[in-house]
Image (cartoon, rainbow, N blue to C red):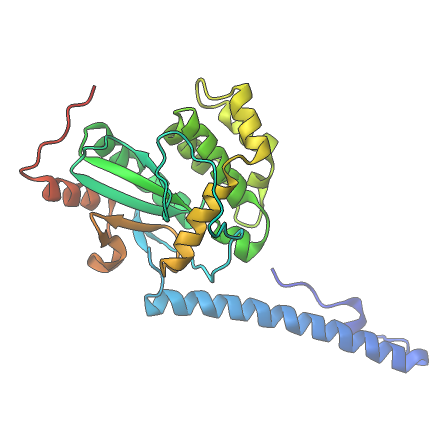
Length: 282
């Protein structure tokens, strides 16, 4: 919301101190103009990205198109520094959390940010289908965590929430806690995920997750290095928005103009898996 003009812009200025009043008026006008310019620039950047197709993931979710535009940034990078690795998570240049059976014939790669509104919309709309395909052995998912909104809007919520999700992975509860975070995502400008006590509180919604080990992991940011490495991989990968969703190597933003529904995602997976045997679920 744009700020209201300062009182010094109103009629009835005391002309006994013309120089000081003019200075205050000019200063207020300059601040107001700067804010308006900032608002227009942000709005124009988003419109251009949407119209020009620069957003990597613009997926149709429940009749609407989810879009979040990134202008880069993040919570820093690790370079070649070693980092702690959660149980069963993948190492390397693009660290990720796997969900589903390793032998599933199709793979969905998701780059996401827990503060990202479009990621929340994607997860809410596609979650039932993704869970169904994972549980039936048709699909495995690789989640890569980014911190774009921390870099663009400030704060540490993307980083802290991602670390907490990795603490849940270490406890074997990533998918459940991942879904809880998106179900309780605060508004984009409210960096509530920066509050580690709140993240621990949300963990109480996942049976068996809260423990001394989990709480210590969240409070100390044990997997911050993993998150930073993942965000670095996102930045170097040339992606320009979250969520970025890739099925069997194909960016879904390039399929049907990005207008992929949950039902169509299921059809794409089943078509790709035709003739392939899904692993038996234990």
